[in-house]
Length: 106
View 1: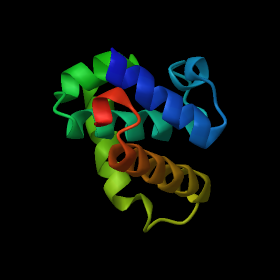
View 2: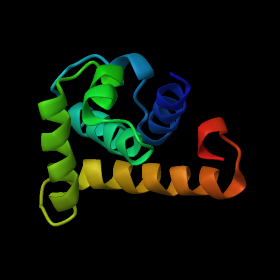
View 3: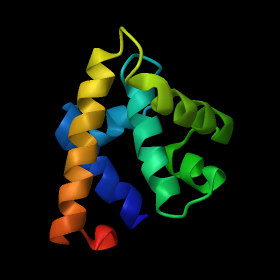
View 4: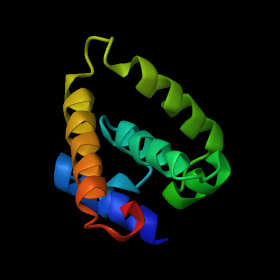
């Protein structure tokens, strides 16, 4: 879907990982967290957890677990890479929303 593709593009830009790597299903850090971040944004756009998980080729329970992890991520040590990527991703999404430069974010 268009929203997923646009969020994947933003995440690839923020993280340095390709879309294929992000969607690969690999559990190597920080890839699961990148999928969680995108899934949380899809859910904020109105996707159900099932729909968002399907877009990212993950189980919806994994996505819900990841959403809980995101809420706690800035309070944990050892998540520096994930926090840095998440902050860049959030900043880009917010900028695109303000500028109206990405279709679904307008």
